[in-house]
Every structure is written in C-alpha cells, then in structure tokens.
Length: 136
Image 1 (cartoon, rainbow, N blue to C red):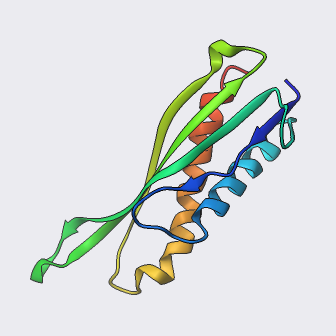
Image 2 (cartoon, rainbow, N blue to C red; image 1 turned 30 degrees about the vertical axis):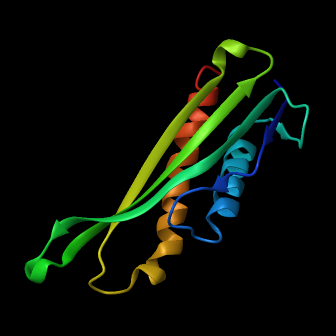
C-alpha cells in the first residue's frame, strides 16, 4: 500500500461545533502522515477513509450539591467507512467514540472546548488508525 485518501468528515450531530469537522479530518490526516509512509491523495488511492461525526454531546457524570454537575463528559462519536482496494477483507464500517471529562468550577465549557476536542480527536484517530493498520 502506497496511497490513502481521507474524505471530509461532515458533522451530522445535533450539537454543531463549526470547526469540528475540519479539525477531525485534519487530525486523521496528520495521524496517517506521522505514523505511516503513505502518501495522502485526493482520489484513486489504495485505501480510503470516509464518514461523518454522528454525535457531539455534553452530559453530567457527577452531581454536587444544588443539583449542579461537578464533573461533565464531552463525548464525540464518528462513523468511519474504511475501504482497502488491495485487501478488501480489511474493509470496515464502524462507529468510534471517545470522551474527556471536565469540570466547570474554574471556567466555562467554551474556554475548555478547543483543548477537549483536540484530546478526543487524538484518541479517535488512534483508534481508527489502529483498526485500519494494526496488521502492519
């Protein structure tokens, strides 16, 4: 295998963060660039990643007094379709999910969101990369 294409991952979740699609797509490209010798091309690649962000949610996981959340969890779910033209037995379509917990005691979600998304994207791209290329 020499080439891979990574399509834009559209955000289809109910809660839309404007930069999430671009950031996730770029994080996946960067993971492939940094951990393989594959060339990323636009089309006619030996392998292809495509999919969409299906969920972006923030939920309380620990309640404090006054029914306020002491700890919250940001979860992102991505549905990925991987096609390998050289070895079709390795094709898959699967949902990947990762999360980060955070507290709102010191600051707002807006001030933490960018860093949380970066951490989650790192987890997601590692899971996806390992699923596609763990047999190398």
